[in-house]
Image 1 (cartoon, helix red, strand yellow):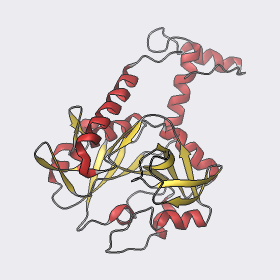
Image 2 (tube, rainbow, N blue to C red):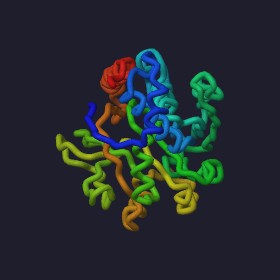
Image 3 (cartoon, rainbow, N blue to C red):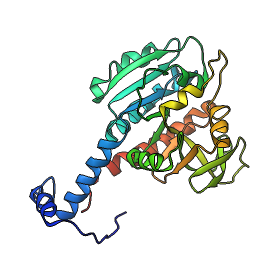
Amino acid sequence: MKKRLTITLDEDLLKKIDASVDGVNIRNRSHAIEHLLDASLLHIAPKKAVLFAGGRKVEVDGRLLYSPMIPINGMPIMAHVLNELKRNGITDVLVTIGKGSDDIVEYFGDGSSFGLKINYIREDAPRGTEGALELVNGLVGREPFFALNSDHIFRLDMADMYLQHASTKAMATIALTTSISESRMGVTRLDGFKITSFSEKPQKGEAKIVNAGIYLFDPAVLGLLTPSAERIMLEQSLFPMLANSGRLFGYVFSTPWYSIDNLDDIKKSKAEMERVAAMIQKESARPRKA
């Protein structure tokens, strides 16, 4: 959806903008300004992401696969995630995997076929999302980084999410969307952008603002994690602690998103994910209006 704006620019700057208009790739002045803003936002946004690709295997069309490898419109779910990361300017991806994940490593390799650099961190046993995050301590550098699940389909302006994250001085920002599924972790209280509490079991049939499984972290958050051999989820430990200290924020988005809520009902989830993936692909192919 486009909105008309009235802005005032320096005349010399306007000449430089007009000089970029070629009538083909940049169609007019409005398109040139939009293109430059897009490029600027991608430049300042984080370039690193952690991808959670552990979990358990499920049967799909007679084969046992880890959920990131479930085929959606001709390629694994995780390939859709990597394409969206690339679209958002991510360049380096750390993938946490479990035992027996050779099919993931074999398919995605070093990431060069996706225009990315991929490194793998192997878990000796399932550790949950918080346990997997603890493994990247010392590997993500000193800048904010994204962390996300690898078994969902989504479209997200990650640069815009970063701008909000920076403006609120958040320790962690969670991408939030709406869902009526009672199996998802529901965020029940928001004070502006600030998350104040979670509800593990939203009432059946009631729309909720929910955790979309896409996070943006300040690297200092890694120092708050306690190493554990148990399987710990971020929603159970780190996020409630950050919410209590006022350092957990939510970024609400309305663009397409779908995640496998129930691994025991793969057929239904797979059909819905294919529909959402086709919607995103169609949207990506549509020429942008100036």
